[in-house]
Length: 472
Image 1 (cartoon, one colour):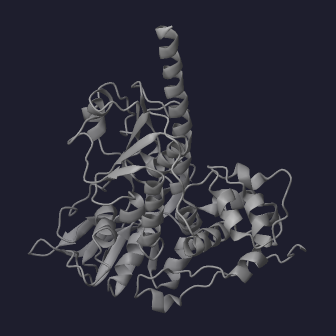
Image 2 (cartoon, helix red, strand yellow):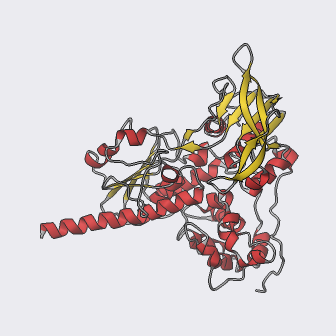
Image 3 (cartoon, helix red, strand yellow):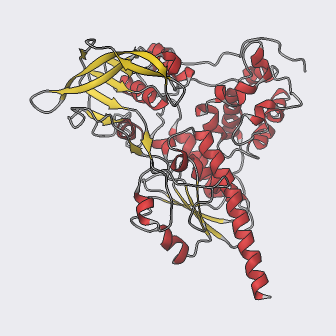
């Protein structure tokens, strides 16, 4: 089949912005088979495969795309899942533009191949046409406990289950999925997709126990010593929100982005059939410039706010959010107040938010992150008329596991210290994802889960071999 020489990606169908900003249906509707084949034909099938090097889980990208050109969609899905256990998720929320697509040769003259869109297409085709669930591997007689059912924990569980381990995931919330269900809105990642991925793991023999706060109900020590797990993987994420430390953050109407998104996503405030307590806002200021800030702002718009502002102390050029998410927010009438920073949150006589004082900024010399440092412009303060403030300036790991696990070393931010293979300072305990790196991407967390799964397998095999030698 001839190469498609177009310099542009096949456009992704999407809802009209002024329609979708009033509903929680998925923003983009996905490729048709004809679109997918046409886009797949843009791939040059490079021998050096630079795109694979850019993927944290090393998906066999040219191979699965070639299968799409032959309309072998199920075979393409099987090729992806050789290394990626969550393709429907990754196809939607991974920052391909800075990873696999950033390495694509087609991107040197024109747009890169739409690898993420093709991955999503294949995963969705499989969901609609698959005739049977994945099979359970023959057990090897060893048990592994996984703390957290976010992308890192799910990835680790999938690889260990394929290797025959008896895997139990302990999840603190009442449903599985971690940040995939509490942090990412329905319009970006439908919860039915996450549920299907978890059901696939169950079919592989993985046991998911919800409402299990490890460090309170059970400790890591008890998992290893009393329940006889051979190893423990900590993939508990970074769910502790950071705040600005300014006046008024204790007012009614101030949320962390984590709380706001959890109320909307996990507690289903987006669904009018649920009586979820959440503020019915008129005007909302979201502080921050990352993907979480975009998610919070777009959610607030859909929940009925007339005005939604993104308040970010740097310019668009320094904004860490995905370009696509910023563009979608702009299309949905989110207003960006760049080079502005909160000074204080203003309350009324009832202790509720009635405004926010901000100051204008300019960019100075680069700081330690390499981005130009924002500097306040004296006398440029003004009051922004809002009744809700959502703080989306980052998160850190919950300190509970550190406090309740003897010998578990962390850094000054509370992130768990690990070696390159995911091993922690405590024997038999491994960790990865946001619990180690701080808040990062879904695919990086998955990559850490895969690395740890291989390390856990090697660790248990080594212990087994050592025991055999002792018995001899």
